[in-house]
Length: 271
Image 1 (tube, rainbow, N blue to C red):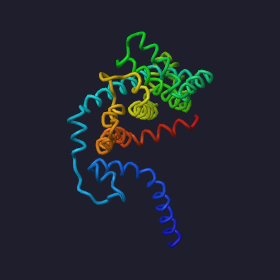
Image 2 (image 1 turned 120 degrees about the horizontal axis):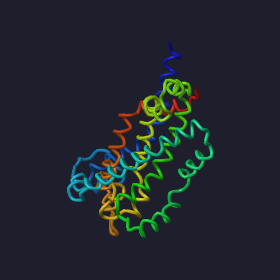
Image 3 (image 1 turned 90 degrees about the vertical axis):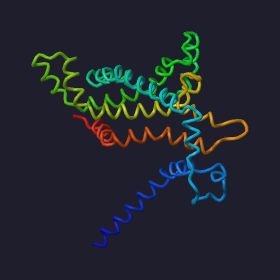
Image 4 (image 1 turned 45 degrees about the horizontal axis):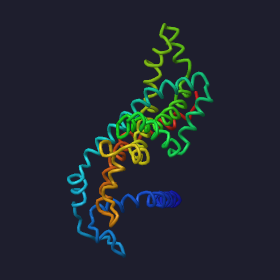
């Protein structure tokens, strides 16, 4: 009995050691979003303070943050949608026909620093007059989303027994029909995992939006710059904007958490 209680205490302490470094920055940011500028920069830090909502008013009322939210949503959804359209057949082909070289090539595109693609994208979109357009941002964000979809789904498709689609083809279904009617429904957890992770990476992307977008298509991470000037930084508004940016990603992760875990673990099991 004493051993069991000791194990629970040790487990709790271990979880606390892991959770505190992860949650502390977010909790600090959340509390700072309700502080005045004086309270934020005060030393020693003020744990007890009078909360205000002025920072959120400046973010949503004065800076037209909802427009930036719409831009991020359009770019993220389109980038993920087109990545699924291209990535699911590609991942299936890699899994079933053992196209390992193609898999490595796509993975290398994900591992390469994004800045290495930035200058070619800038030159191409400038000459095509696509700067400050959704097309430029969607295509650039697909460099992030598409490799994630292929990487996750190729492993997941390999874990699905080949006999299932062979049975369907024996009954007269084409390979395309078997893929759409049998494989994709089974692979739903993997697809949800791909959507969640690729959307979060697109949602938080800063570098491509910083160079390829302007006032018309500015996304949420870039909008934070509105509160940074040469003379000062409005830390309260920056913290409020950061909370507003993180909230949709946190909610999405919490909703699909079980699917993400299942998708990642099932993809690691062969046969």
